[in-house]
Length: 280
Length: 280
Image 1 (tube, rainbow over the protein chains, first blue to last red):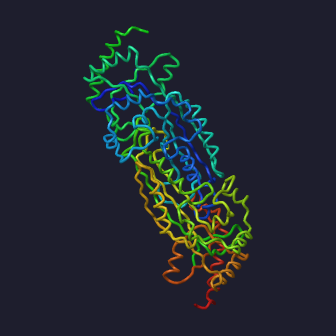
Image 2: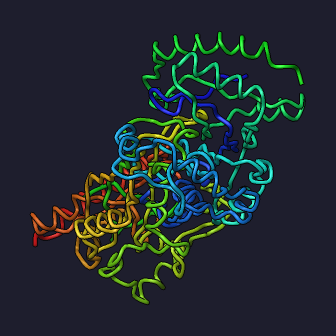
């Protein structure tokens, strides 16, 4: 049992049955051996920031589709049943936009917001750097970025990383040396819902939170779930009491005390329920 | 007289007769109101770094041509005479590559390296930022870049800035708020070579450096040269004793003591030569 997931929303607890995986890497573009005056040398040498922006832009089109050949080959299409289940959840695009402070949502065309968050792969540049924030007329010697692709079940992180590497190196402009270091990769996962453990969790959550949990997927990644399955042959029960406005991985991260207390109750009930589940 | 230029190379003094101008601006792309977990929210919101890279990449094609409509309209084509003069200068691409530490030169197709450095406009992202250099799985709330276009004579910095603004805002993806602040702009300039002041400088430099100066243009910008012409009606004599391996705007900037001494001598001779030039 891993409690690193969240509720569907305030007052609506959930059991998570799917996680995205991902592949994370750092990209460095190197140009001249040191910074160069952008007037004296500009136009004569490849600029590592220009090159990095170009390469990062090439990875996706303006319909939100990743351009790396084979990227979508192993993506399991959403079934009609699952699309209907997602659509039946009480999700408000307006509230969501207000919560995160954007006028419009964005992403891969042809999918709803929950589908894009839970069951479709992503491409996000997590950070980028080159030069200083002050205005200084120099072409930088190098620039870098941290990049992630979130992946869905069946996509193989190693194969994706190799395809991305091939894509980027084939398009690296003359005068630029590229370096790509994969930090880590993890496959996405879907766990079965028809187990006695899930039934036990349903009962426990209802007792702790006073409301039946819904089933949902989650866009984040918990790589060890795959290791537990591969190495130990067991599925993981994915629970959690957080909310998606908890500002995780962001300033002012919080956790509601009321949910903390409900979670304690649900956990105590869970041990009780699990004690009556026969060992497989 | 402004001494902010350089020699053509070691042992080859020069008189500069053309400078590039430029327009410098900062671009900020804003997305969600604060950083968001890239698993929970990835795929649902526009990522400011992705958007910034895309916009910066759209500004130029892979032949080194700026894509902003009208950008080249006012560029004065190089005359055959000037191209021949550039080609006659003792410039070695191999030495230049070695000096700046690149395997290949790059830039706008169809022009030699000196033409691209002295007489063609450029597009360089000078710095870029968003997130941290550590790997952290968050979509940033914002990202930014400092950008410059070096311009050649007749290109109007205000018009170029307005055209760039229009180009970028028209292509800004949904969910991203763009902000563009122009820091400054300066037109490029070409000064006449047939003046008695240039003749005086030629004599003075030959006496100070023991070698006749060549005539060259320079990729950098000295905005006040245009103001002197517009406000005072006078041309500027563009001299200088630096070298293009002086690491200007870069770590370990230097200035050769031998050139310092030769420059002192040439300057003394220059006052002497100028004293015999009649006031216009």
